[in-house]
Length: 349
Image (cartoon, rainbow, N blue to C red):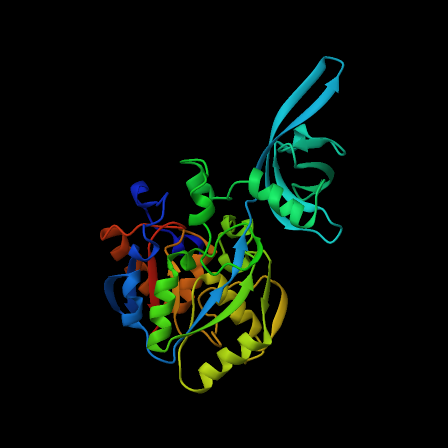
């Protein structure tokens, strides 16, 4: 399997920089085997059955992008440098792993001031990342971060416009509970409370799992033989209740449909033994064609970057040829792509 097998040409104007308004007005491509239907997310209920179970990732995105100033007194006098930080994850020693630009302008022990309330000092570096110790913790840190930080929009959106106050709402799911992600589970952005209620009335059930999406989700694949790619790891948890619900749905003949590739990767991690069980830890599961799915019957997901691990995942579920036909149709029909784009509902043969 070559990286080029998962490539395609995407017209620039199909990259969405804002979501549909309202959320459920996004378009929905429904693929059942070789059949493609064009719909809208608000009609999702028409394609599901009583007894189906949607698996939702309830991670909460933190405003992880910070801009600050480093001050320094040198032989030339007082100087300062603008420092951009993207928080990645908290570490066991109380510091945060972060991408820092430019890292070379910050020395160990130096402080970056982000606001009157929030600042951090560099404690160390490793693997191109910095380890930052903040002056605040707990609820005080959360409040200061919410005031000073911006949503960590994907690079392809950030290159077109800066994050703003609207993104604080747009780049968060309505069922976000457990903070820790630095990227949204974007298929879930299409849901609102009214749609969830409509689905529930039909007899569709829901299970919540947590996978904190990391910045590694945007890392490019750099090897030509995709089977040699080393997948980034992300922390996740499937509770005993969620595992039992999913297992019961399988037992009674319902379909288990993760909303988003993050939920899919997590439940397939928890089912590596053959049946889904409660699970917690770091997963680096890499799903590409040939993967044996244990619990996933279908998938709701957005349209993904060419040559990405997520293209490989959907190709594993639907087959590479089918995915090529789906994406050819989506481009011809001018669906909107990527994190703020439209959605697809994929039922394998």
